[in-house]
Length: 179
Image 1: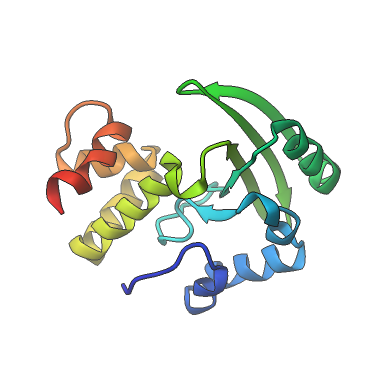
Image 2: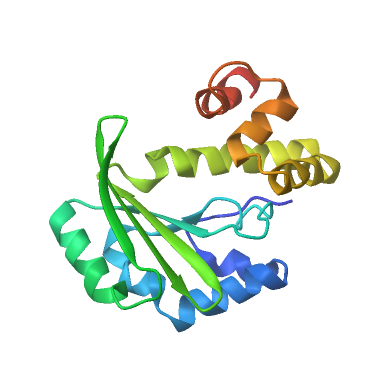
């Protein structure tokens, strides 16, 4: 695994068939283009090749004006199959979560006022990618096996790494302790 700039989707073109299909679908439906002013970044399991059946395309976004973001996504994606929008507070931060389907892929937009590169989802993915690079293919296969058994991504990493406590927090601290 080489270093990847996850903020540019072109890396998907060098990936497996599913990653290449994701690139095509996101371009065809202009998903990233329609979200461009919100700094969209594909995060989660597909970019780092640990997705399992039922995984969605997670796209992190950053808004300055929540109402404008909500209006934009309703206009852009409101007619897509399965469209749902929720305004929630996560860790004291206003968050908008939007779900809809394009082609064969369920998509989840996760938007906060925090820059994408500082959001936990993006940070988790970078840490998980670094761990996968370090631990190799057998470790990646074990993560996928746990995920197929229903274990969420961060708990799967924490379990295999022997991390204690909240898996989401301990994974964020992993790179600090082990880099």
